[in-house]
Length: 452
Image (cartoon, rainbow, N blue to C red; front, side, top):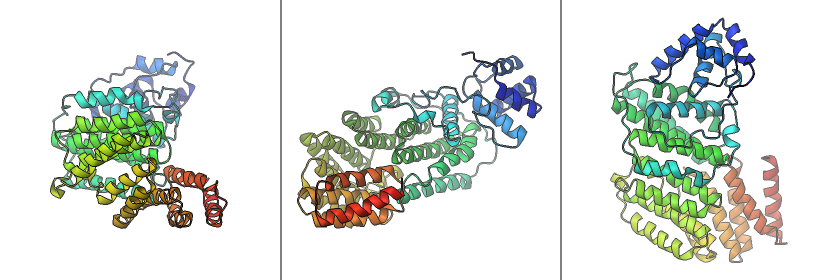
């Protein structure tokens, strides 16, 4: 689409003393370095951009990279007048080539790291992800480039990347997504992205794409946790693509399980159940019992939220039966989180939604008793489930006591989902003019006001 002259691009090129031919040459060099064989640039292309034409991806980000290097300061898409490049379809498709996948990944986390929120403005429904999910389920394995590495890439490098991803995982479980999301995006953009652009052996490439898929999944989860739901879905879809590129079907199933969790949270119950089933079907040949149990539990949560008691009970029985066959040695890292505490916590959530308060309280208590301190955010969720179940059964004083225990942990956690659990419990208490209720509401309102 033709616009007016791109004065911002022209001004920066003048400042950098960069001619049309010079910019074209540097972009061609970058394309060669990053193995972007389909990217071609000459001085006539640059002339059109200066006149206001918007280049196709991944050229805008490459132009910003060239000028960043020339000027010695960070140049963004907004700085070069190309922020209007539509974000509506970023990372919402299945990408059949490595080059296309890396370009889209670059675009998403570059825009995200710049603080550009247009990727989160449009609503992205769970139904909008049907096409990439179906294609993930049916696509043939993606062949990575297999060639000499662009630099020495030792096992120690991969170990360091994996360790960083594990650190981010631990942090989000402890403190919620709000504290570290920006740092995780920068890790993707500055540390992971350059490696994905290099040539490398297929073995190293698959490990890299697995790590990138894990990190994209984590950023999606952090985005979900702080209520950037459209952005979360873009990262989840990107993670699914990266998992496919790495050949890791179990990681793909893990992504779909989290997408199902988010869909239930947003009230898209039918889609949530379908996402869980897609995880099972798409990776059936690779899934160990622990993963199958987690998938069945997620389907049960969608069913209970929709009020389908029969479907929920069937899925919970499937989850429990499968979990009883878990073999620790066969567990992949992606589903290791799903332990006994997680299983009984899902029972508690489901029974709370179905109004079976006595059973919900029993399972929530069991989840708290068997959980570890490594998951304080999850313990907060479980305590509110317990509190809600106790309130349903008429034990208001104990319900407020349990909720107060959760309240003490919330101050260290930045999670919009935690705030929703707290707000929902407060709404249930508003109708009760008793001393325990008023005392709790006073403390809860102070906390909510402090974290506005």
